[in-house]
Image (cartoon, rainbow, N blue to C red; front, side, top):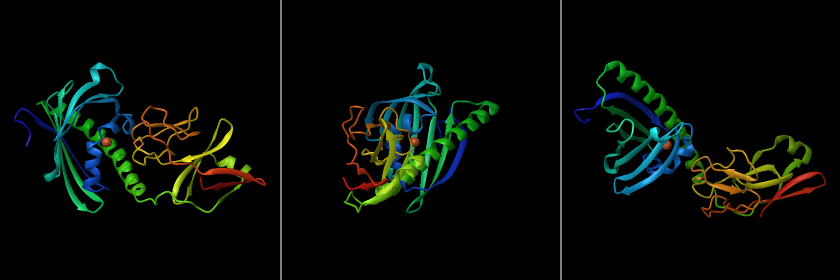
Length: 262
Ligand code: FES
Ligand SMILES: [Fe+2]
């Protein structure tokens, strides 16, 4: 039920390929908003946190003070539902209500309704259409992240592996950048400062994909929460202090490239 002064602008239903637990993790993870959803949001800062969830200052694209809203999460885990209320900024008072229904171990039906202080039917319909387009995109991005997160959470622990023959150096150069598997874990190969360089393609934060963004100036950015790493050393280069897992060694023997355990 929405407040008496609010009207329902849109209803969006979707079968999400993720468990309710995985979706809750995503909902509480405010940090991914301006990185995973960087085409929708320009910035997000935490304002506070209580038992019901975060309160954030969220700026939508293309940025600027006019686009900044204070948004509060009210989670009801027991009932598998939450409400996101815009407290300040454009659309203050509006509510996004989400009801989850577990379907299977890795499928959840979500029903999202958008409630706003608008009575004019044409305006309501136009706003509702924009909302559904935005939420389709956001859930596409979230679902891809949750599916990949589920897959990477099941990877084997790092362990020594037998040397891997990557074939002739000339043929390999044509295929760079490239992701290969070593010991069951993804490793990225790229030319950095004129050197063939191998680095772990798993972000040490939440095992995000470091093979979906380009290496620039020797560094790579994780698309999930924007953590950055120097791929030459594995060290964090954003001050957050995390380190990539040890990179395999790359050697050239008789024109062939080999990858060996670190
Ligand atoms: S998984 Fe969070 S920054 Fe990479
Ligand atoms: Fe998201």
